[in-house]
Image 1 (spheres, rainbow, N blue to C red):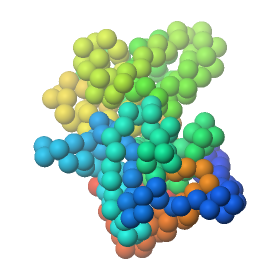
Image 2 (image 1 turned 30 degrees about the vertical axis):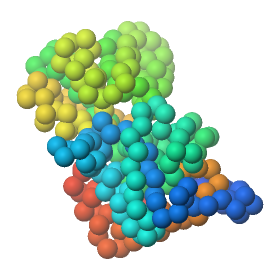
Image 3 (image 1 turned 90 degrees about the horizontal axis):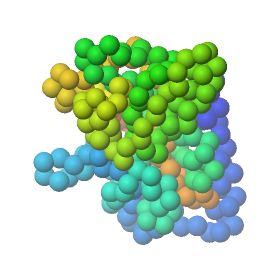
Length: 267
């Protein structure tokens, strides 16, 4: 798994580096609106981003967006967008997407990415249920729910074909929902048997379930780097984001954020 993560990180770095040639030729401006850092995110995904009681957007990604904007002497503007439409708006509706999105080869075909934290998924099950998957291999024959558009959809389909069926086990029944809360509700209603969710969000979902849900997995599932996505060719913005992350690591603000939200550092 470590080699896979390193491969994805290298691919992201190469994509951003190669885009510099395009940027120089096209003379691309680093921000769509000077002085404003527009960031797309789906604001239904605590602890990454959610609305508080005063209708403010709070969480890990707004915190990162604010610090990156400050480094560029810009004002952050957070734009709430459906998860499946986020990548399509990069470089058009907003400068970047910071929304708890893994860096995947498929996404790197459309946009560039700067890794900012490392995370993985947890498996959530009904507390006391007979179905308590400890690893992804225990999901054979299980009705699994997850948010539409996540990278785990393809991973689970491959696991079902390459592991479950080839070993004489039942296929994984994959059900996609528009948002993570809808997945959790389906689990509580027993319409599915397990939920795959990014670890920090899974922890929060369980804490808010009033004892009805529990994390059944014993280790992170599919650990991957999360990325800040930007338009291909905008090397000026990529460099500014990387410089902001370096500054955050030097002044301790990066370490404070990943500790607060239970993530791991990208070195």
